Amino acid sequence: MTKHPSHETYVIIGAGQAGAWIARTLRSEGFAGRILLLGEEPHPAYERPPLSKDILQGRKLAPAAWLITDDILDELTIEMRLNCCVDRVDIATQEVICLDGSVEVYDKLFFTTGSAARLPHGFDTSERAFVLRTLDDATAMAKAMSQANRAVVVGGGWIGLEVAASARSRGLDVTILEVGTRLCARSVPPVVSQWLYDQHVDNGVEIVLNAKIRSYCERNDQVEVTLCDDSRLDADILVAGIGNVPLDGLARDAGIAVDDGILVDSRGRTSIPGIYAAGDVARFDCKWAGLPTRRESWANAQEQAIVVAKAALGHDCEYDTLPWLWSDQYGKNIQICGNPELGRTVLTDPGVSHDARCWAFLDDTGRLVGAVAIDAPRAFRPLRRMLQKGHTDFPTEGWI
Ligand SMILES: Cc1cc2nc3c(=O)[nH]c(=O)nc-3n(C[C@H](O)[C@H](O)[C@H](O)COP(=O)(O)OP(=O)(O)OC[C@H]3O[C@@H](n4cnc5c(N)ncnc54)[C@H](O)[C@@H]3O)c2cc1C
Image (cartoon, rainbow, N blue to C red; front, side, top):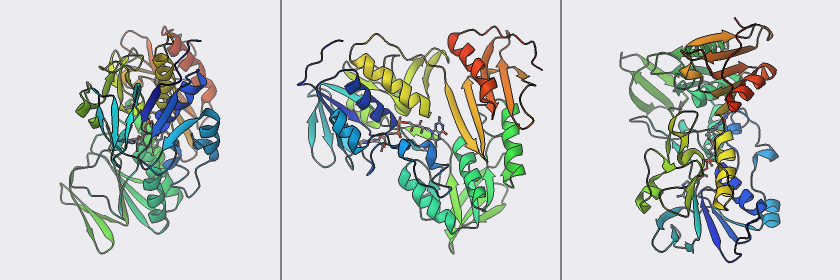
């Protein structure tokens, strides 16, 4: 194993999922120097998927969702500073300057600043109007849900749908307002959007597609949404889930190349030597998409971070993992891999049980490009494996 000088300091900006995995991997792969993890939130690194599921349904974060505990800090001798927002990075002096005035000198620097929820035009967060990104957001939203009868969710993407499902599980009346013609249109083909639509409607959610919102306001403990066709909806709580923006401003201001995310290669290297990025904030050379891509998923935050930490230590490794993500709604598990949205032909596995689904998506030339499964992990696994290995000649026999 390469020896790394123990007097070096590696600083990680962002104590979230990717930041935690970089810190843990640096140490487990033999880095002997100082590891400093700086996080703006008051909580040590945690996984976010439970926020829209467990937390909104009134449960606590499971112990396994905490990625950095006191035991891990002690065992791996990682220094972590919370409530610490990095204000500026000076590349010339290799300094990280925090809002509290503290300054840290780095030998290598990692950006894992993640992304922030995008705010709809004219939408202000309040006690009744929410976005969902942090544990504190989720805790406040769960409390509001416990006292509410009716919710309006703006955005029919993954976060919006999970919020809607959690709100229904607590007995709220829910309306989803989606500006597009179908749900999750950016990530799944129409057959999956339709399945999602049916699930939500069957569970009592009202869905308005092509919903163009004119304005939001709060009046008499209610939020009011007015659509462009002059119709109006009132609710006790309003949640916006219309996507995220990468937190790349710090890197951009420091002179690092960004383009809707920090630009990195498949080893996480930015345009400045010795500076890396991983997770939601990184736009990387993705062989699966064939163009620089930003992925916002649990698997990406962990796996890319591990590769980037190893690459920073000189290991010969590249990040080329197949896109994979999941969602849980109404007790059903949805898994997606590859690029199903590029599929032109849909094949269905007739072998899965009545309530389950497994779809394979083929492109114009008949090659497998993606798969989606609902409560069908056994049928999904071989498709995921085929895609990861690049075996895309799809044996259509037995599929309909
Ligand atoms: C509600 C929710 C549900 C999700 N569910 C799923 C799911 O079911 N399946 C799935 O695959 N993915 C899911 N995801 C996506 C997944 O959680 C994210 O892709 C992942 O958390 C990204 O990790 P990250 O480390 O890049 O960013 P984050 O986990 O967001 O961490 C970034 C950290 O950096 C900190 N930071 C930012 N700027 C600074 C600064 N200047 N100084 C100091 N600290 C800073 C932030 O405060 C934050 O703590 C979900 C996400 C959310 C929000």
